[in-house]
Image 1 (spheres, chains in turn blue, yellow):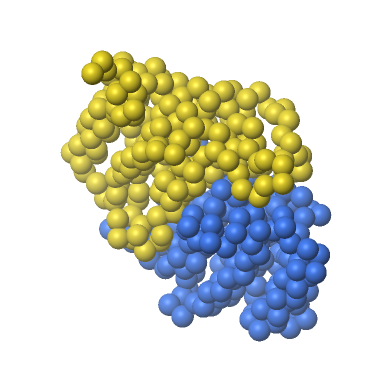
Image 2: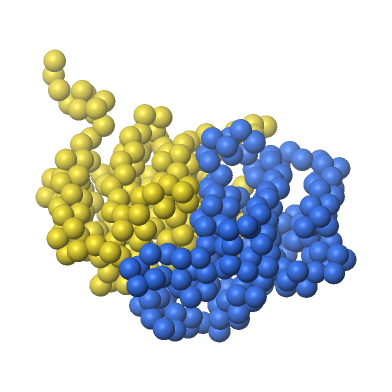
Length: 195
Length: 208
């Protein structure tokens, strides 16, 4: 399977990057074709520019070469793995910006003549999200875990009817011991092997 | 009231820009003091940097823009967000503004040994969101209405305990007529015009 792993964390030594490395290793071992998109390392621009906004509904909505390269990968991938820390109950801005600037009309979805949204990623079979949280599990639930909602509901609406979703969360990360973190990496590895 | 309007749209000719001018016009006409931040005009950088992440628990504010936004947050008692809804939530520019501006010592605090944050924006008693959606209300419900939850739940936790939230939204904007858009602008003006101070303040100003 072709898998795109999207990572969003400013610090390459972070636990988020350790998760992404574990996921990549497990997926590669299983023979999947893995591409890691490290948004901070790629210096991906977060905010949609005025020109991009004006070109959004045109024939050529992708103006930035980085976004265009990512869009080319997105069009071919059969599985997404998103790895990010949850900040203020949602995904980091750079990942939200990635959705806005790469998943443009014609890539992430298709707008029909009545301006209704139609599925654009029908080749995608799996969406996996892996996130770390500072809050406790029930606090995350009370805040409604908006990053998870965006990926497993809003993005899911644009993928194939049969797309399967799964989620892995490490809660209260500031209080986790090294053993608990290692155990979480094992869970990530197991989940990726069974993809 | 002291009202802080945070506006976010890349295109100054957009409908969201028209919504913002109607909203601030109505607020000023009602006698409120208004401060506005236009994130795109400011050239705000929304991605949290590596240094900011490392110093998250002991922030030094290097960016004078962030210091200005923080001062406005401490000054206001009503916070108004004006933005288009993209991918069911705030534009990344505004998401990044929350990531970088809601910092320790301004928006929240963490006591030694505690794992729960305490709210510091208790000066804010009204939270207003004015937004436009390309898709219908049903599609937004299916998508999880994340933008509404980020402000109504997460940001609200940092404000006054009895802060009231107001949601003014237009759905189906891509298929709307001029008349519908004008009606929405009137609705925005009306809602902003009657934005009242919190009831406790009214009670304090009256002599019973």
